[in-house]
Image (cartoon, rainbow, N blue to C red; front, side, top):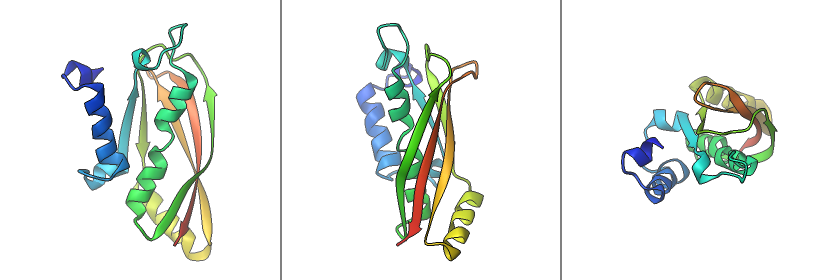
Length: 147
């Protein structure tokens, strides 16, 4: 909603997301290491006034894979391997999620791949409302190996 209040259309918001995180353009190292997402109910609402569960999941689905691809670089293969979502409370307002891949996480991945052909990493994502109440948790299992 903030972007809309600032006069940024939904089309411009999507294009900005695609050009930065998904295509890797116009981003600093810190922007790739940390990301935030906002999911609004008026863009993805059900007949009972809540956010579709599928919209909750799809909004967070690619983020960790894309972040790891961008941060690890072309010498690594990164794929989503599995995911699950647990609905805790109906999402009736804008939800947000934060994503972080620290330098320590990257070092641990690189170190593990010195002795193993591939590894799986698990990331937990919480979709929260403005009061901080968790409406859904998503667990992502990411497969990583050297090329």
